[in-house]
Image (cartoon, rainbow, N blue to C red):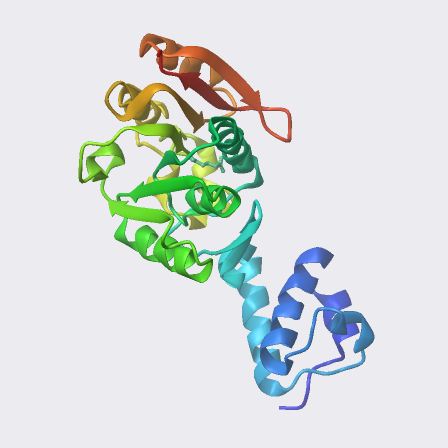
Length: 282
Ligand code: GLN
């Protein structure tokens, strides 16, 4: 087989949106030629060798079939870090940075060694970005999936945060191995109701179902997590949870019902109520 058409033709003839074409082609250039992304412009008359061209075609067809870019690249940027991701974990979303910011504000206010619990850590996005930004935070991260914990532990190692973040296997608080209370509890649990059509659309089709839905009305995991504050949150401590765009009222009610005070809704970058926080009485 002869060499491929030049890069500029690969770019202009591809069925994918231009930004995605550039991301995937940059990956090929880096992997096969150790060339930086700028080569897409500076070397646009270059052809790919047979091996690189075959891989390019494979990547494009994966994307055409709907596989998320983050899984194809095997990584995703979140807050100030980059995480390895794969089909065993939810792809971190920019909206979730709101949860990280709320935790970081609380840690800065406490201005002492702070114990943070991240329930259902997945790739480790929340736990690791908190640890990365707040050296005073000592973070415990749980997940019921061994596959997810393998990825989050690997991420902790790559980011040099293994000393600051402890990973535990198990469902919500059941993962904790000793009686513990935390200054801050955060979670982005599965909150999509089981019959929600979004589960069969877009990126979600490729993500772990158990990270997306509670197989019930969408509120059952949030409810367990909030109920656990009576035992696992320190007096005066803060809990903040992410939820679906239409669940804010319900989550506020759950927190008030659990005796939490100062219950607040927080807006994400798109202006949707995305996180609710509450505090345990002193
Ligand atoms: N934010 C994700 C979505 O709607 C869902 C994440 C979750 O269930 N925790 O695509």
